[in-house]
Image: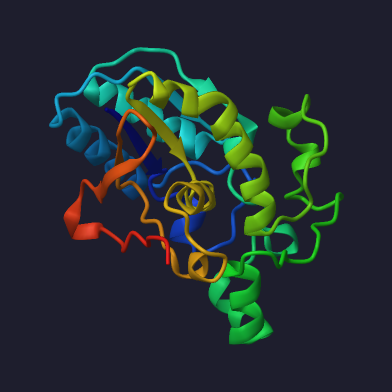
Length: 237
């Protein structure tokens, strides 16, 4: 039996300001650091050995993982993959969510934020927030200018199938420190969630989701370690 622990990074500074973040490389807020520390403590209480660790290119996820590793006393190296980055929010990047909702209206706002296959308008490459200007992506080709959840799924899930799934099949315990839409994409795959139902899936910050697999890769159980901050884990129809 193997375990996959998926952690959405702790609250970021832009989460705290209610802004669309996407690929902008903002750091954890003070609350986010505390959430990461609590994640580490909850994982330490499991008394498990963790074999391999994955995260994105973005420091809010990296720093969450490093805090967790420090708390659990594990100094193993981790693997960074741009494929595990947050969804790119296009022209919404940097905007306040409440103000944007007022401007766009509830229906259009919900389509851009939570639909399966409708991306926001593209972010101008000359924007202050353009990832084309960020040195951490200097070696990356085909940087997106906007993404739907479907677009995010199309990079996250192939990466999972190619690089992570094999470790689960070898009965290893894995931690992924990533982002809300990264984990939504993985959850859609793992729990076989429909295109329609995935719009309702919410992922809390800094709360480890632990998923148990049998030797054939079938999901046996799934739960959030902090029951006071859990969200519904949507299953297949």
